[in-house]
Image 1 (cartoon, one colour):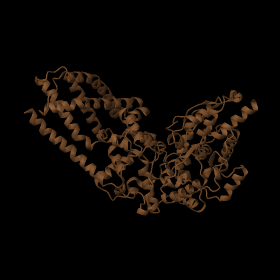
Image 2: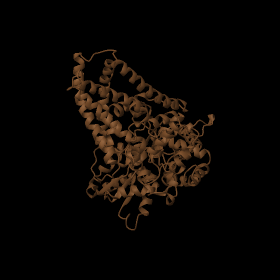
Image 3: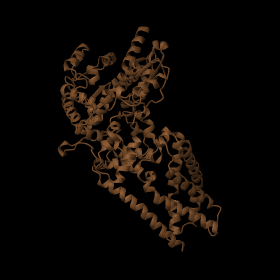
Image 4: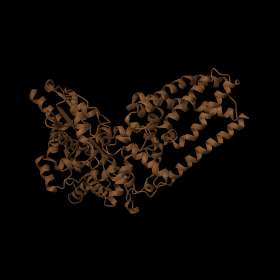
Length: 619
């Protein structure tokens, strides 16, 4: 009787699971695009750390992450036990009396205790503590699943005390099996589908943060306009979201009180897919206001423990809007500058030449120069940042580094790429690649983290590969490789804080080298609340450098970051990105009367060169 009853229940549960999974798989299969599995070594490494070892889950929220990891590892350990019990219950095989099974079963007891501790902590956190990232309402689904897991562990442990031949033992066994079957039937319609899908999304996530593929204009691709245009990985991501809220908690726009919430975007996508509204416009689903608030800082993707990629969806939707002429007015002006003058400021090329001449820069020649210095839009035209580049040039010359610049250099296209103007980006990229190939540098040096990302990664998809290094990394290497130097001016060093640019700390993973340069002169580094590979954005990225800040809802992202930096008590804020400097100085200028006084902003290269000059004078 037990065999037939369990067979009947299993068929129902498997049927319910399969039907729901099939519906979702059909939506994934119908989505355009394809999954990419290149760089398999990097993907497997991330799979090991983020799935097996639960690194990303634990890193930001150590206690909650560890509790989740205990549940995950416990379930993995119990997979064999559950399978064996079903084989026994279905009358297919019985190994429950074998000595090795008893050893295995005893070994599972500590895992059961760990899972109980973990799931009870998570239940209290979700149902009672309610951190903001989890939403305003208690999820009944989460409570039910937590109670299911608790029941599974308790019935397993009771199995050591109850003889299965007794009524109590049989009830306990059936309770355990029925919960497993109910869990199976409920998983596809809940966020716990991530148990099945997250290993795939983590493996399929691009090793490159914020990777957005190039559009193929010969195929008349224009970006994402409607739900039906969402690509396979985005659809898979929508069904994988665990609703943990880490993307929300780390989003600078949401943190500044704006409408954008990356978690909500994913949940809206899932809802639209399941509702069958394939023709719904993305600008209506997400609202255009939300889509243009993203700074492309990458915090959402970088923090997601299940491999969800938000930026391809956001930038893809921006492409769809731009292709229909629906970009914000401030971007129209920037696009016009790029089209007419090939730089974001709309300044004449003679301005760049004046700087090149006054700084005594040579045109790059691979036979005479070691590196090519990429000036970028800021270095070529922005007077304040040119002071930083002059400092870099002085350091390079003092270290006998031979360098030159391109005779003709255009904007890399980063602002166009991140705001959805793919046609303008590709036009600029192809022109720059042609000039770079003619020049033939082996190493490019730049002080703009956005240029590092664009030339180093985006240009690679056009077949152009070159080593591109941020000035902080390059100069740190020069200082490190030089004979041990004394810094007599170090005694006068003060407290400083370093603002990590998103495209340097998070995208490029370079947060140690700037601090290495600062600390070698004896300065005390006071860290802001967000730093390293998870900084709080300055608010310039994604085209927001050009936005009318007075019309933004919520607080300015730059104001929030300025307050965080100010809270360190440091009198000097060191930056390493021209756009971060512009935004943070703007926040300082707009601070309430007296609120921004006493803080000096200085670019890293200017800071290092100034300290070297003090050393020379003191020595």
